[in-house]
Length: 450
Image: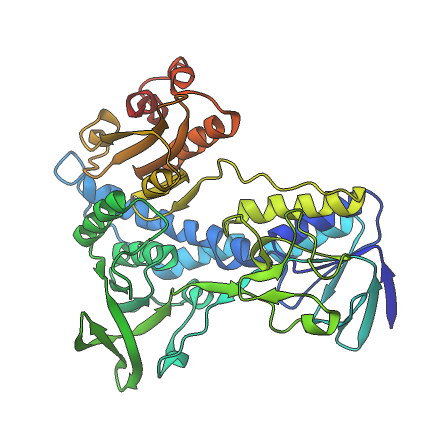
């Protein structure tokens, strides 16, 4: 069967769905295709289910912080089976709900592996579909690992589907996936170890706050080992033996499960992009600033599948999906605006950033005032028994505008969201301080941080 469309979207994650709905709402004949259930990584295998599991860990941590302060935690514990059932109550119906919503927008939904036949056609199984425009939004997959025994590792998707949480867990890689899962696992009673080959984990976040987070994690049972390279993983009668080299010294670590948290790459290898003359690399499809392919004018890309200046975040993917759709609909060249986009590591407590790192600001020659606050004794921390909370706000001395903000504390990503608005709108710290927050609330701390 051959069908013709105005646009075909490859990838039914957040970027692809946003674009398909936008084009469908304008009356275009739209098809969307994915080989996996509709919804993408964030909704089904990442951000959303992770934070559902994190909720259980938060409750355990909160009760421990209040020990001796009026709360007797008693037998409170995480029932992993029940927590996973709660998670599936969200993830299981999501694909059908999203697919039905697409159909309500007039989008034809297809299932299977899409492969380019040429610059205007793809095959999905035995069917060929024709269009003048494609949007590739296929997301990312775990980065291939090279050491012996890498096939024994499970990825983040499999971790989020574990029926039982084993006691000994090793995470390979010192990024946000490893840290978030390790903080959940520790509160659930496991003994997680994070192995990072570099000298500093969480490289995209403020190093001073990362050090505070690592210390807080150690107290909760999260073991972080930097400058540690995994050389092999061997199956044993009782689990796995992870062979490592730490600062030149060989060692072994026994584990029940080993988790891949060592980065992700665009999911492009199975699309046969070369047959359509679409330039790409391990960073994604090569696109112009307005998300159009550098080699095929009828092809656009968004999210993790595109080589753009935007960070690999779900909100960025949605922005790019909508911008790409608008550019196709209007034959325009609008460029996505990445100003003031916050990001977070949802550990306990959480670590957030928006804008430049301190080193980046200095490298750009900005005349910055570094406003550091130890918030561990502030009322909002004392009230819940939290002893780790801090903020580092970078302010341009020349115009009083915030160029970067780095925050560690309970629900501190909400501070990052507020500061993101200030950065986006170009507000000064003086203007922010004129706003009166309800008190006592988390938001009322912002003025003191500035």
